[in-house]
Structure formats: structure tokens, C-alpha cells
Amino acid sequence: MYWNPAIERLSAKELEEIQERRLKALVNTVYDYSPFYRKKFKEAGLHPSDIKSLNDLPKLPFTKKQDLRDTYPFGMFTVPLSQVVRFHASSGTTGKPTVVGYTANDIRNWVESLCRALVSCGVSSDDIMQIAYGYGLFTGGLGFHYAAERLGSTVIPISAGNTARQVELMRDLGTTVIACTPSYMLYLSEYALEMGVDIANDTKLRAGIFGAEPWSEETRRRIEEKTGITAYDVYGTSELSGPLFTECTERNGIHIWADMFLIEIVDPETGEQVGEGEKGELVVTTLTKEALPLIRWRTGDITYMESDKCGCGRTHPRIMRILGRADDMLIVRGVNVFPSQIEHVLLQIPEVGEHYMIILDRREDGLDEMTIQVELSDRVSIDTTSDILNLEKKIAEKLKSVLNVWAKVEVVNPGTLQRFEGKAKRVIDKRKI
Image 1 (cartoon, rainbow, N blue to C red):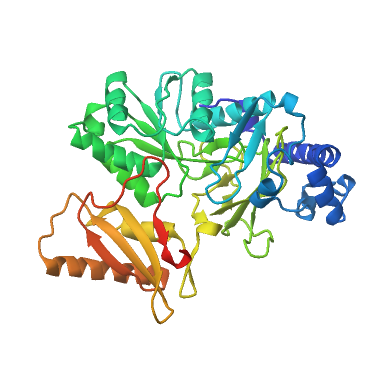
Image 2: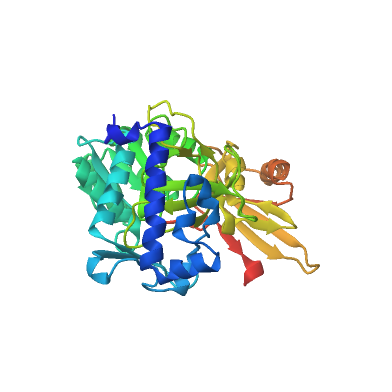
């Protein structure tokens, strides 16, 4: 099933021609209408005429989140505010917020991108979609809302939280697809059972589209085992528009629509492009955005790319599951550790539940100490202290074999650790306090 087959099945050569034409137009536009980009180009000794093909892309300077903060609120816009029909913004919890503006055409392209994505994972006008992402300045809720309505799906715009009501509406209104964070889906299934509702047997839910936080294949497996649904990955950032891309029914990578976005994978340290299949930081150039075009936007997300034709027939390149964020990487005793690596290990252990917390501290002797609190699975029963200690040792040894650094493990009872209705907060770094 395709939303726009004429575009989704273009040949690699045809896509490259579109990208090259739009890249040339983009650099001319930002040079003419953005003092920010004109200054960056001049500092780099560049003129738009220097960009003659896609091979010239590395000549262009990177754009970073700090640039949006430094030019807050409108300093990177390339259209007058009279053409901006909507703002979205980040929370600003880690610094100055970032503001993204949209023209009417930007909204249409956002909806087009997500419509292609939703159709690729089987969503249709026959579905009832429950949107449990936040609405408002956060892009998640409204992005899914507009795309689902455009498809003709029935929308339940419940937003995040109010979990009892989520379960009630899911059962009573016949929800077939849900969109939320993966950690919230695990919590939702847990909460539903406490209400006497088994999602697999008591609802019509068949699929979930999960994102806004890194998650692993093991989390996918746990969600599917608990709920009986098919779980799909979604990707997007507020700066690029919001949720934009998903896996298709093949579930072998996330399709990036190459007629709208030009992607690279670069070494996070050097900024040099890496080869296909090599892990690095995702960099995106927006080819059709009008209000806030971004050139070589460093997303901070770590992944790798595949360009071979997908089994679904779509020809656009794919990025694989986001492994973590460059700025989420933890350095423990000189070793680089991603929370997603820890999750990958934990969820392969049958005795372990889905909820965990990573606590970093510094000992009196100056060495880093990592403690991982993890809940027991509610499907197992361990009664003796000896059994708990043996399980903690088993988990610690498996973590050490993957991370190459020792972690103290504390096993706690089910329901002990905090649950989150939005993005899960898995790391407490006391070294920064």
C-alpha cells in the first residue's frame, strides 16, 4: 500500500536529480534571505555558485541547536512573519528554547511526509487512532493528528497522561492504532491489567507507533508480548517539523523521504561522512522547508544508513533504529556507554522487568560509580535474599561483558521505580549536581 506511489518508488537516479535541484535552490534562498546563513557562508568562504552537485554538500557548514538558541526567536527564519501560520517550540529545560515556524506549505509537506509513513506501516481510513503524545507546543500530538485525519482515520486526540481514561477509551471506542512513547505503552499495559483490562484480549488494538525516545528491539518484543500488537518505530525532531518517518511493514529501518530531506551519517567527533552501514550522527538538510530551512542540521542522534531497496518496494534510503544521542552518551571511567546498550542487555534477561534507572556518582577516591536499579519481572517469583544476590551478580556480569565497565546492580520489586507518561527519564547523573 502506498500513499504517493509516484514519489515513493522513484529510482535512485531520479531522487538524486530532485535532491540536487532542490539543494541548489535551497542554498540560493538562504543566502539571499537569511543573514545568519549568509554570514556562515562568507565565514566558510562559500558562495551558492560553489554548490554544483550533491558531492559539494560537505563544503557547507553544519547547523546546530545552539544556532537556534543564539538567534532566538526568529533569527534563522527566511520568510516574513506574515507568512508563518504556526509556531512550535521546545521546553527550554536545558537552555534557551528553540522556536520553529511553519508556512502553510511547510504544514502540507509535514502532513504529506507522515501520511506516507503511516500508510507504509498499514494505517488506513479503517483505523481508529488514539494519539497519546502531548498536544501544544510539542510537535508529536498535532503531527499525528493532522496526518491521521488526512488519511481518513478516526482520531481520538486524548494527548498524554490520564492513563485510566486512555484504557477506558481504547476499550469503549475500539482503538486500533495508538501513538505514544514506548515507555508509556509499557506503563499503559501494566495499568490496564490493574483495571482488569487485558489489551490483547479486551481491546481491538492491533498496532502502535512509538518514538520520542530511544528504544530497543527487546522493548519492542516486550510490548508485543504484553499487548499482542505490532510495534513500529517513528522518527522526527521538532526542528525538522516533528514526527516525519516510520518503519514500513517490513520493519527493517525507517524510510527517509529523499525528495524532502537529504541525509548524511557523520563521525560525531570529526564531522566527516562515514560509509554506508557505519554508525555515526544523523545529519539532515531540509530540501522543502520554507520558514526555517536547515542546512546540514546535526540531530545528535546516533544511527546508520541503508540505501538498498526495501522489501516493501519503496526506494528511499533508510536509517536504522536510533541507538542513542551523542549528548546522552555516558562516560564511565573513560568508557563510552549508551543507555540503549544497558536496556538491550537487561531486557534479554527473563527475570528482569521493563523499568530501570541508571544512577551515576563519584566515589571519595574520585572514580565513577554506576548503579543500575532494575525491577523484577512480575512473571517471576524470587523469595530468598540469596536468589536476589545471584540474580544481581548475573545481571552485572552480562552488563560487564557488553559495556566493558562494571556496574553495581540493585534488583527491586515490581512497581518500585517511577513511571513516566511522556518521555522516560532513565539517567540520574549525580556527578553533575
